[in-house]
Length: 410
Ligand SMILES: [Zn+2]
Image (cartoon, rainbow, N blue to C red):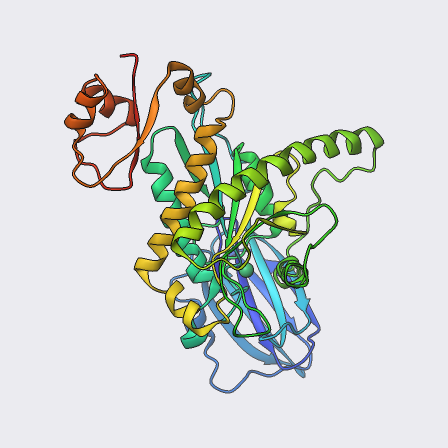
């Protein structure tokens, strides 16, 4: 079982394709799954699977005719949705039952209100895969879904500590989010940038290095990119969640407007990607020296510049071990962070605090070894108090590599 904010996913591994009947009963609330021609695998304990679950309190199973009946005791009224999945390595046949909480908590996300002209730059950080989609598998049980969630959380912390930025985690824990839903979450938050973090596998274990992708014009630009694009897009197949199509109306005007928006965004995406790639090149080996293009679904938001970073190849044993280490992760996160700040500070979106500060003539400064806040203030003819206020700092503590803004007109 996997808990997501909107649903609990129950996955049955089956030895062959399964026929099933799914329905609910009330007083008390239950979800019943009748499996045809089935028997329980030896050693399976239904009670163990439900320990500590939010929506499922208990699971019982018993033979029924020549099949098997599974009963889930659930908390309140849930809407179940079931589907079967054909084998996708490393998995065999599966039956998936998603238990959705009723209506209210599936309502649209409400963006935080901020004063006009001083809003934060919003960065949607998307950790790839999750839940029953583990992504790539590396040596020593290293899994892409865990590595990328760790990187995403660290990156979010860096941005949330900086004034003028707000990070939103598209996936907050170990659960699956459909690719279209990832884009919807970013749009609901009115994100200024969408960044998807991955660490994939390749057929050959010797392939390594960091890659940065933006959406391609005509699909993939290289054999590697095409292979990866197919693999990432098949995530929706793996997740099997209802693929809500986004703005794909066949209307001619909509098409033209979408094309224009897409063009502007693709340019911005490439600029942001290039800034990140430049910084990553200092801390990691690059797979390619320029931003690559591919047809990844998550990059297809027509109105949000979107970048996908392959932080390395988990199929390469050395790189997998490296990606699993805290110091390497923090270097990668630091480089992505520095690259995106460089991009946003050179072209701040209209209406943001960043744009406002640029108009005010504030300058950004990177802390070096030996710097103190009072020393920097003296050099720029301002006060430590003003610097603290502009950057939202509560103490004089600074660290090497930290980027701060220095007010020059106060
Ligand atoms: Zn991936």
